[in-house]
Image (cartoon, rainbow, N blue to C red; front, side):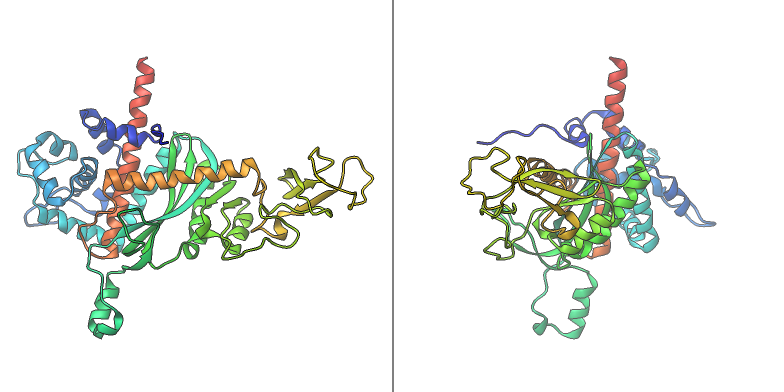
Length: 419
C-alpha cells in the first residue's frame, strides 16, 4: 500500500504556487546581489556599457524558478515577459541580453573568484534562513549522483596521452549509485556530497562538496561533519548532537570523529559479509547473559556515555535460566558498556532501541531534498561540460532553493499577520 506524503518543505509549497506573481518577485528579491555588484561594476571607462551583472544573476535564478531547461529558453522568456525582465533588473526599454551574454557571465562565475562569490551567496542565505528555523541538533549526510554532460571516455588503454589528459580535465569519472528501475548502477559524472540540518521547516544545507563520482562518501565525510559542526555552532551557539548516515558511511573513524565533535553518529551497520555477530552478542547486537539469553537494554547515561543492560529474568522476561549468573540481588545482573570502548557497535541511544530507530528514520529527509533539487530545479540535467560548470549549476540550485524557502516563509508570515 502506498501513502501520499504530506508537504514537508516550504519550498514545495512555493513551487506549487509559483505562478502567483508575488512568489517569483519575493524569491528574486530575497537574493543579496550587492557582492556581485561590487565584483562586477557595470561600466569600466570608455566603450559600450555591458549588462548589469546583478540582473544577469537574478535571471539565472529565474531560470530555475521557472524550470526553464536552457539559457536559450530563458532569453525567450525575458523577451516575451517584460515584467519578469524588470523584476530581474533589466531595462525593459532595451532588448534583453542574448544567450552569448549569459554564457560569458557563466564563464566569469566559473573562475575562482566567481565560485567564492557563489559560496558566499549560499552562506548568506543559510544564515537568514536559520534565523527563522529552530534546530533539532541533527545533521544528515548523504550524496547524490549528477550525470556529466560530456561523453564517457573509452578505456584508458584505448586513449592517447592527449585524450587521457582531456578526459581528466573535465573532472568527471565513473561512479556507483543506488539505481532505480530506469537507471544503471554505474554512471559517469559527479556526486554532490552534502550535510543538511534538520529544522522545523525542513533541511537547511550547512556544507556541500561537489566531487568526481569515484570519490567515496567515507573520504569526504570528515570534512562535511567538521564544516557542518562549525557552521551549526556559528548559527545556533551549540554543537549538533547527532550525525545521521546510511551504511555507506560505516567506518570506525567516522564514529570517533562524531565523538570528538561532542556528538553521536547514527549509522546503519554494514556487515561486510560478516555471517556471525561478535562473540558475546546476538544478531541484534544485544549482550548475552551467562545463560545465553539476550539481556535487556535499560537506558543510557549521556553524561558518561555508558549503556546499561539488565538480567532478562529479573527484568520480567520469560526466559529459561538456571541461575548461571549466580546473582543473589533481586535486581539481577547488570552490565555496562562505555560507548568509547567500541564506538561502531555501541551508541547512545543503543543501536537496537526504539529511540535509535526513530533517529535513523529521519535520515531519509536528505533523500527527499535531493529529489526536490532534481525534480524542480533540474540539478541533474547539465547543459555544460566540466566540474567547474557543474559546481556553478549546483550553487545556483542551492541559492534558488534557499531564496524560494525565504519567500514562502515571508508569505506565511504575512498571512498570519493578516489573520
